[in-house]
Amino acid sequence: MHSIQFDGKTSGKAECERETALLAASTKAGVPLPHMCGGHARCGTCLVTVVDGAEHLSEQGNAETRVLLALKAKPDQRLACQTWARGDVKVSY
Image (tube, rainbow, N blue to C red; front, side, top):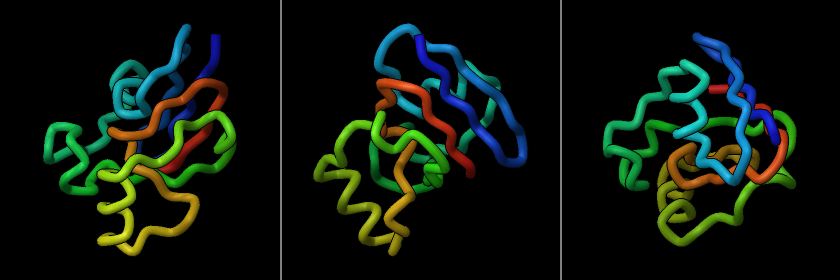
């Protein structure tokens, strides 16, 4: 069991038993993260900043890397729709 904590306009925490996408965990936590493209790594609206637990996140795939480069995202920023947590993580948005 691991927890994914969200801090932003709305804060919340999701308790997850297995690897979980940050976007799915935000829904479980009651945190309304925007995702205009439906979670398909096309828009970048689900951009989050990893505060703690980056070592528990999946590697960036090609689609996520392309969008992050286009957004000129910082190294600690990820797309919630493309990032899977395997342990405790805290993000802000």
